[in-house]
Image (cartoon, rainbow, N blue to C red; front, side, top):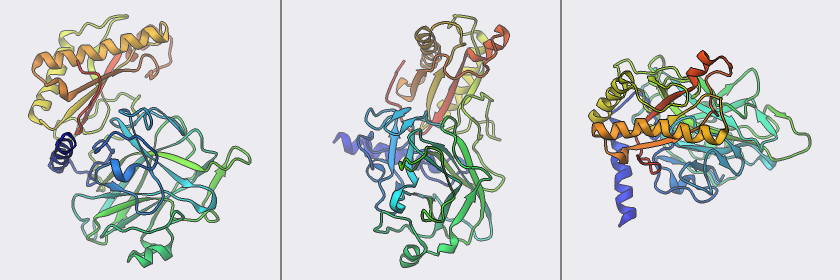
Length: 379
């Protein structure tokens, strides 16, 4: 019965997503899930509206899990760029082994309209190769191919897809950043009727442009992937930026963007302090008003400190700062089941400068609005 209630809740959240925003990808940052991941190759079982079109075992990571968690997991360490989750897949591996993801769009693409496709990627630390090209396929229908190898033109033809329709996104350099997320972006003129998007490497090992930076190792090129967006060109709702930049992001209608980490501009703290100023409370009230208007929205609050003091002390201080904001939202009337708070200590500074006036920028709180419930750190 509990599982049934959870599935019903996920479906409610899914249909709630349909009424907001211009991103056509359903569950774009993999926040909506059936079960907290427990094992490798779990995408099909755990994530709503995403599947693997081949026998390759694409992985799902979520902060709720110990076995398949974030930031630390079996292939490296990376914080989610949006929300609490991301996926992991091999773009290059021995014997042409490949992994892919296929996602659903909430409405068909319109013929002749140019769309922007984008997603965030980060190379896992245990990789010994990096690739230069990502492939994207838009299709009218979903499909399944019984292979663990490259999804080739022959395979695509057998399932009614055109291999010539694969969009190859190539950078001047290799996708080798293992610390930051990097945006992969391209434009696509729709043929009309496309309802699914598949991402991966559609070239075999011989044709893949790759960089081997660890000698004779053969681990392959394993990438974390987050926030997939398909939107009409020039009408993207996502404020694409790194979480540590801290620029205040809003949509054109004045509402904060979904799944975008946003800085509380007026929630600033004195050295070693957690008190909220009246200006801070006024800004929090504005966010509360939007949360009250949108009952299917949830908020993740992140606290940060400057670089003065021990790591353990700063961790506790950052948690207290995030909790102060969370508790004030509860005082205003927000259900604490819609809030998650967390602290990052001094690990994500906006500035490395030792100057105190600049260090003040690091004493901050950020937030992310999501459309999935949060299960940890209640106020």
